Image 1 (cartoon, rainbow, N blue to C red):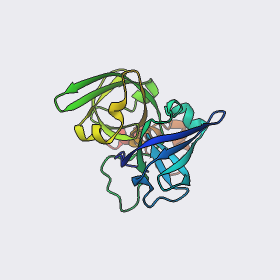
Image 2 (image 1 turned 90 degrees about the vertical axis):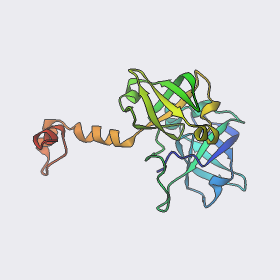
Image 3 (image 1 turned 60 degrees about the horizontal axis):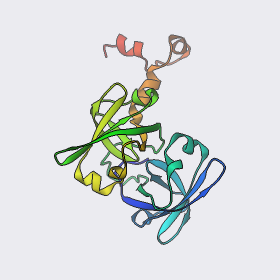
Length: 218
């Protein structure tokens, strides 16, 4: 698990391509502190396992499933990437709960200066958009952000100067794609409320469902 608070911007040092996968070598420093082989590091929001460690970088594999659902296939040597180590029990939850499992990608359709902030608007498919909530949380390339505006097929986030400085988000141009991870709470709620009456009848214990909530005044 992660928080969406970026610890460091790393640089892609090398990419080894497989048939439908890649191996990334990333230059970094801070995220190496306390990190061991097999630990998780989120790279642009994608949870990856450290397979090699060096004094100034690490290596991780990106499997075909991640390649299909993320923008990782567009990376090239020299690109900057957002990095965050997995949470520990002593960590502060400064952003929101982020799993590192990407739901899809969104395309930047506008960037506008708004006083000291920059408003970035993205469009995404219906599968992703149904979990986007106005004033709710969303992770873009691993960065925890708040939805400032919600449209039918797009949404806007606002980047404060600090976020712009410590992440790669303003490196992106109109037309570029960002990894999107929806708030995990919404997905669990949908799953719990999605049981049919037939499914509920099979349960030997009361289950959380839409009818249960209505019957109990929620």
